[in-house]
Length: 177
Image (cartoon, one colour):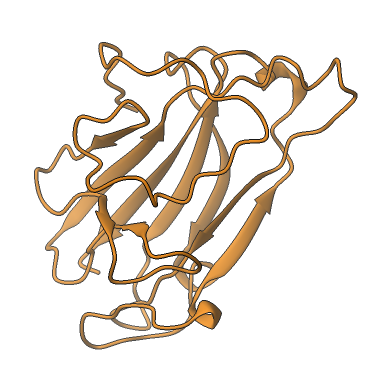
Protein backbone atom coordinates (compact mmCIF):
# COMPACT_ATOMS: atom_id res chain seq x y z
CA UNK A 1 0.00 0.00 0.00
CA UNK A 2 1.34 3.37 -1.01
CA UNK A 3 1.15 6.38 1.25
CA UNK A 4 2.84 9.72 0.77
CA UNK A 5 4.90 9.94 3.96
CA UNK A 6 6.08 13.46 3.11
CA UNK A 7 2.55 14.90 3.18
CA UNK A 8 2.25 17.45 5.98
CA UNK A 9 -0.81 17.03 8.16
CA UNK A 10 -2.36 19.26 10.77
CA UNK A 11 -1.99 18.05 14.37
CA UNK A 12 -3.89 14.84 15.14
CA UNK A 13 -7.64 15.30 15.43
CA UNK A 14 -9.08 14.64 18.88
CA UNK A 15 -12.08 12.57 19.96
CA UNK A 16 -14.92 12.53 19.39
CA UNK A 17 -14.03 12.75 15.70
CA UNK A 18 -16.62 13.24 12.94
CA UNK A 19 -15.94 13.97 9.28
CA UNK A 20 -18.74 15.30 7.11
CA UNK A 21 -16.64 16.89 4.34
CA UNK A 22 -18.78 20.03 4.61
CA UNK A 23 -15.79 22.35 5.02
CA UNK A 24 -13.91 21.25 1.88
CA UNK A 25 -14.17 22.50 -1.66
CA UNK A 26 -11.54 19.99 -2.78
CA UNK A 27 -9.49 17.13 -1.38
CA UNK A 28 -6.37 18.39 -3.16
CA UNK A 29 -3.52 19.72 -1.03
CA UNK A 30 -5.42 19.54 2.24
CA UNK A 31 -4.08 18.79 5.67
CA UNK A 32 -6.81 16.24 6.44
CA UNK A 33 -6.94 13.80 3.52
CA UNK A 34 -4.56 12.22 1.05
CA UNK A 35 -5.80 10.90 -2.31
CA UNK A 36 -3.68 8.21 -3.94
CA UNK A 37 -4.52 7.55 -7.60
CA UNK A 38 -1.73 5.39 -9.10
CA UNK A 39 -3.52 4.86 -12.44
CA UNK A 40 -4.00 8.62 -12.90
CA UNK A 41 -7.66 8.12 -13.79
CA UNK A 42 -10.77 9.09 -11.82
CA UNK A 43 -9.85 9.74 -8.19
CA UNK A 44 -11.67 10.33 -4.92
CA UNK A 45 -13.07 13.88 -4.92
CA UNK A 46 -15.35 16.14 -2.91
CA UNK A 47 -18.87 16.43 -4.32
CA UNK A 48 -22.20 18.15 -3.73
CA UNK A 49 -24.08 15.76 -6.06
CA UNK A 50 -24.86 13.25 -3.30
CA UNK A 51 -24.73 12.86 0.46
CA UNK A 52 -26.44 10.91 3.20
CA UNK A 53 -26.76 14.00 5.37
CA UNK A 54 -25.46 17.50 4.88
CA UNK A 55 -24.56 18.79 1.45
CA UNK A 56 -21.27 17.03 0.64
CA UNK A 57 -19.58 13.67 0.45
CA UNK A 58 -16.57 12.12 -1.22
CA UNK A 59 -17.05 10.12 -4.40
CA UNK A 60 -15.06 7.98 -6.76
CA UNK A 61 -16.55 7.92 -10.26
CA UNK A 62 -16.04 4.27 -11.13
CA UNK A 63 -18.53 3.82 -13.97
CA UNK A 64 -16.80 3.64 -17.33
CA UNK A 65 -13.27 3.19 -16.02
CA UNK A 66 -11.51 0.50 -18.01
CA UNK A 67 -9.56 -2.43 -16.64
CA UNK A 68 -8.46 -3.03 -13.10
CA UNK A 69 -7.69 0.01 -10.96
CA UNK A 70 -7.11 0.89 -7.33
CA UNK A 71 -7.69 4.19 -5.53
CA UNK A 72 -7.14 5.22 -1.92
CA UNK A 73 -8.54 7.88 0.40
CA UNK A 74 -6.26 8.23 3.44
CA UNK A 75 -7.10 10.13 6.62
CA UNK A 76 -4.93 12.49 8.59
CA UNK A 77 -3.89 11.30 12.07
CA UNK A 78 -6.50 10.95 14.81
CA UNK A 79 -5.40 10.89 18.46
CA UNK A 80 -6.75 7.71 20.10
CA UNK A 81 -4.17 7.70 22.90
CA UNK A 82 -6.70 8.65 25.59
CA UNK A 83 -9.19 5.86 24.87
CA UNK A 84 -7.72 3.33 27.33
CA UNK A 85 -7.49 5.88 30.15
CA UNK A 86 -11.19 6.60 29.73
CA UNK A 87 -12.11 2.90 29.72
CA UNK A 88 -13.57 3.23 26.25
CA UNK A 89 -13.71 1.44 22.97
CA UNK A 90 -13.30 2.63 19.39
CA UNK A 91 -15.84 2.19 16.62
CA UNK A 92 -14.95 3.39 13.14
CA UNK A 93 -18.20 4.06 11.28
CA UNK A 94 -18.72 5.12 7.68
CA UNK A 95 -21.36 5.17 4.97
CA UNK A 96 -21.01 4.15 1.35
CA UNK A 97 -23.22 3.86 -1.70
CA UNK A 98 -22.47 1.63 -4.69
CA UNK A 99 -24.11 -0.06 -7.68
CA UNK A 100 -22.68 -2.75 -9.95
CA UNK A 101 -22.54 -2.22 -13.69
CA UNK A 102 -23.34 -5.92 -14.32
CA UNK A 103 -24.47 -8.64 -11.94
CA UNK A 104 -21.12 -10.42 -12.42
CA UNK A 105 -18.99 -7.42 -11.34
CA UNK A 106 -16.46 -8.21 -8.63
CA UNK A 107 -15.11 -4.99 -7.14
CA UNK A 108 -13.82 -4.35 -3.62
CA UNK A 109 -13.97 -1.72 -0.88
CA UNK A 110 -11.33 -2.32 1.77
CA UNK A 111 -10.61 -0.45 5.00
CA UNK A 112 -7.12 -0.40 6.52
CA UNK A 113 -5.81 1.03 9.81
CA UNK A 114 -2.34 1.93 11.05
CA UNK A 115 -0.76 2.75 14.40
CA UNK A 116 2.47 4.14 12.94
CA UNK A 117 1.15 7.01 10.78
CA UNK A 118 1.03 4.91 7.61
CA UNK A 119 4.30 2.98 7.63
CA UNK A 120 2.40 -0.33 8.03
CA UNK A 121 -1.28 -0.90 7.22
CA UNK A 122 -3.56 -3.70 8.46
CA UNK A 123 -6.72 -4.60 6.56
CA UNK A 124 -9.75 -4.65 8.88
CA UNK A 125 -12.80 -4.63 6.57
CA UNK A 126 -13.47 -6.08 3.12
CA UNK A 127 -16.66 -5.72 1.10
CA UNK A 128 -16.70 -7.26 -2.38
CA UNK A 129 -19.02 -8.29 -5.18
CA UNK A 130 -22.62 -8.76 -4.08
CA UNK A 131 -21.60 -8.10 -0.47
CA UNK A 132 -20.73 -4.57 -1.59
CA UNK A 133 -24.08 -4.38 -3.42
CA UNK A 134 -26.30 -6.73 -5.37
CA UNK A 135 -28.04 -3.86 -7.17
CA UNK A 136 -27.17 -3.20 -10.82
CA UNK A 137 -27.24 0.04 -12.79
CA UNK A 138 -26.48 -0.12 -16.51
CA UNK A 139 -25.59 3.59 -16.63
CA UNK A 140 -23.76 6.06 -14.40
CA UNK A 141 -25.61 6.21 -11.08
CA UNK A 142 -25.73 8.72 -8.23
CA UNK A 143 -27.43 8.01 -4.89
CA UNK A 144 -30.55 10.14 -4.49
CA UNK A 145 -31.89 9.27 -1.04
CA UNK A 146 -30.65 8.24 2.40
CA UNK A 147 -31.85 4.68 1.71
CA UNK A 148 -29.21 4.36 -1.04
CA UNK A 149 -26.47 4.40 1.62
CA UNK A 150 -25.14 1.54 3.77
CA UNK A 151 -23.74 2.22 7.25
CA UNK A 152 -20.81 0.15 8.50
CA UNK A 153 -19.65 0.04 12.13
CA UNK A 154 -16.17 -1.44 12.60
CA UNK A 155 -15.49 -2.46 16.20
CA UNK A 156 -12.13 -4.12 15.45
CA UNK A 157 -9.97 -1.05 16.08
CA UNK A 158 -8.20 -2.75 18.99
CA UNK A 159 -6.06 -1.23 21.73
CA UNK A 160 -2.87 -1.78 19.70
CA UNK A 161 -4.11 1.13 17.55
CA UNK A 162 -5.02 3.53 20.37
CA UNK A 163 -2.10 5.84 19.64
CA UNK A 164 -1.76 9.55 18.96
CA UNK A 165 -1.15 9.07 15.22
CA UNK A 166 -3.81 6.50 14.27
CA UNK A 167 -4.86 6.67 10.61
CA UNK A 168 -7.33 4.82 8.41
CA UNK A 169 -7.81 4.51 4.68
CA UNK A 170 -10.38 3.35 2.18
CA UNK A 171 -9.17 1.47 -0.87
CA UNK A 172 -11.46 0.77 -3.79
CA UNK A 173 -10.44 -1.86 -6.32
CA UNK A 174 -12.45 -1.47 -9.49
CA UNK A 175 -12.65 -3.78 -12.47
CA UNK A 176 -14.47 -2.22 -15.45
CA UNK A 177 -17.19 -1.00 -13.06
